[in-house]
Length: 338
Image 1 (cartoon, rainbow, N blue to C red):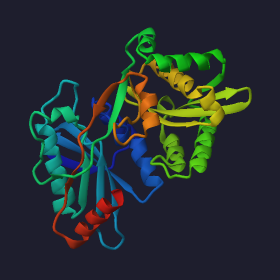
Image 2: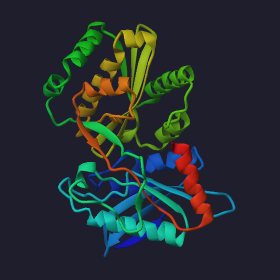
Image 3: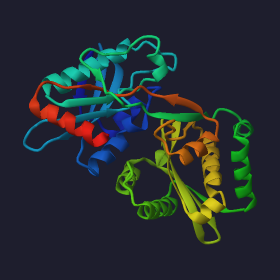
């Protein structure tokens, strides 16, 4: 197996990643580019070759300390390695991680941190420990749930938790106006509501408004972020945003004000978002994060009402050499993440 790192055009990268069944949002060209344009990161993209055949692909976010040439390489939900849902042999993934360690740690002297695209149940029968890596203690993997949009709409609605369905019915009886689409006249109001919510709550999200705005600029029309805005008359009650990639769409953000919560507009917006994504032909609707311990209880309860199929990925593995600067970077990262 060989690792080739080079520059890829948006179309080339998108064409390659679309061939993999385990495509994640974090491995899309547009997300990586937006992250690099709005923060202290640069993005590097690689393919894994077996002969002339691409067997894996990986997008890494890199942050180098000025003048020192050392830093962090963060690979989130990658590398991609599964071409069919039935592909269960993890030996190929192990070989890819070994190649990544050789390139980033042995040759470049970086601290390498990877959250592999591997479901936790896949490693329970036998340990998964690639050569030269160690598991990061105390870190659990990404967890969420997915709805199968190939099911009839009536069946998806029947599967809703009774209380969730009743809240949806209440919002539907109010005959609220919902504006939906990927055009600026929908996207901008969504971002305005999101900004207001962040200012009200006073916290810094992982998806900053500047990153989302840049991300939207890179996306082609057929994959732009899809927004829904709920209104009563001219008053906005709330908004949500949905990402689209491969055969999957993902619930990204929600911003609902007090009047919107009273009207259950969050139920209406999410349900209509699911309906729109099914109509557009997507197979999966990812609920965008449902960790049993890490997701706030209210959000976890709300998303659980949709009766999606839960999944959890493995945690993180790390690799580094004995360089004092690299060890200091590792200690700093571990301390700030606690």
